[in-house]
Image (spheres, rainbow, N blue to C red):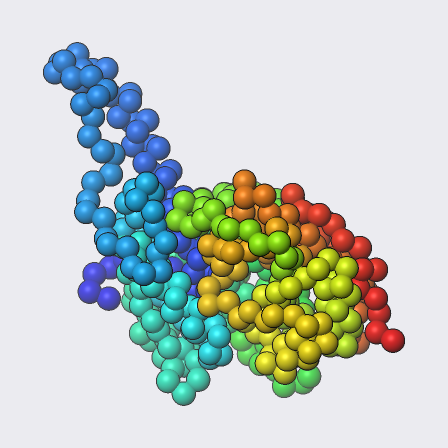
Length: 409
């Protein structure tokens, strides 16, 4: 980086990058509100000296907006883009290796650049990069940053990069339902562990033990204490810990830039990677999708970026669905449209985010419970309660019983 970044964002997925854009938009709005309030307090004295009235006031934020790119979807009435490169975060993209995630990340990165943000692509996995290489490259920037925004506090790569971040203010933006578990584990003083992970074998336990010092350091960095600021920016229903600032992500940037969408007559079904993570049995999942398709008139299936081609082919053949592989996070796809008047999902992040993104559009979001009989023998003991909690805490959604998707025969 040519100059130190006051705010540094570390993201690994398209959704994390989208939520950094939402956070930056909310941050800019809060700063504009504070400036307006300060200007209003000083205005009477200025008016008395100069005779100028409120109609003579200039803009609160100055600067030439960047030109919107082909992906921005910005309308003229939306005004200039977000905070810009000088006010917003410098975004470091740490891409995974799978092609779907990388493609979506590049598309959202283009949106971020359209908003005036600086985006840097830093390989940290696979043949072209390594975690230690990324740490060597980024350590100085992390150390100098006054604020660090992270999208996945469970990520070992992010935890490694947080080691040099001694005095920085930390912000966690949504990584979906994992944010709920992050806050709960932090409150209980537990080591950070993904909810669907099981104990693993001897090799996995040995690796975890070797990594424990790094994980412990990251947990201490992320724990509010000693006056150090800590913020969580989320759409999830979480209770903040003492010393933690909680701000609601209501997808204001997405709503200001896209839509409202054109609505179709059919129903859309949102896919999930619960099969790929070993939580749900593949045959049970296929039966559930088939049953939901028949009962609710589903015509399109929006695939999760981690779903395998073989699984999607089987779903298409069994249920007669059009399989859609989105090139952007679903919140943007749905807001741009066209989209069904009803969107059905299994317990996942979107049952919390889509009601915000689609507010006022007339779209109904419905969630289908996961029957415990669908869980695999390898599913973690935490899986059943966690999935039920995702459904139970969703706002402004229609609940569908698990019986809508019968067990495999």
